[in-house]
Amino acid sequence: MAPEIFTRIDEQSAVIKQPSCEEERIKALQALLSCPTSSIHTEKPTKKILEVQKMFPLPVDEQTLPGVYHCGYHSESSYGATSYLVTHPDGNIIVDSPRFMEILVRNIEKLGGARYMFLTHKDDVGDHEKWAKRLRCERILHSGDVEGHTADVEMQLYGDGPWSIGTDFDLIHTPGHTELACNSRASGSYWSWTFSGFYLVGILLLLRSSVRVLEGNEVFLDFVKF
Image 1 (tube, rainbow, N blue to C red):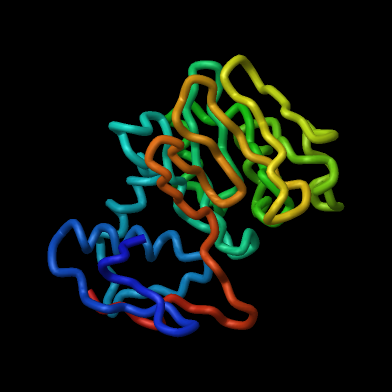
Image 2: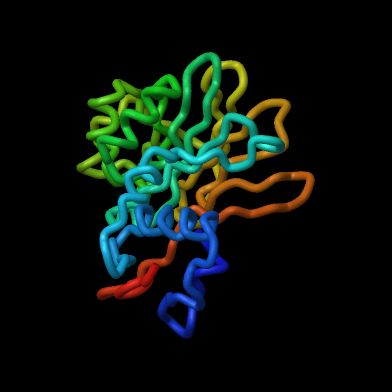
């Protein structure tokens, strides 16, 4: 997020410039809220953060991907994975688990809540239990990736698929990140979810769902001055 502000230098993330306009300040604060290790800080508290909190989930691209939102609030327990919300008339789908934050819960509820939480693989389950309890959504995970803390998921997938949920969504076996990782595909659309985000088939745009968190204390930055 905010690549004009943050970049990677060697094995660390760093600030390459200070925000110079309102748009850059908002994007930097969005990154601050989304950082899975809470490693981005402002020099002084800013009331602007209250406004930015209300922006999540963020529309990914209202023109080419209507109804697809970036949830933000990446969870360290999900290794910084990105979670998305897909809105649909038959029930919304959360793809992988964001950090459980009350303000994000309320904002998702305003968009219709969620019918399903599709857990693409065992690494990105995060706060799935809290989300399922609050939104009363059905969690989906491949049976081979089920472990003790996910044993009570409502829907387990077996075999190599594909599997269908509703009339528009297919779940596809895509081994790679884990042997039993899966993704979802929307019928008639030009995008497909994978364990590492989604890509637009026509223009080959890849959005990664994981922010690499190194062993130890990986940080984006100790302090960011606005």
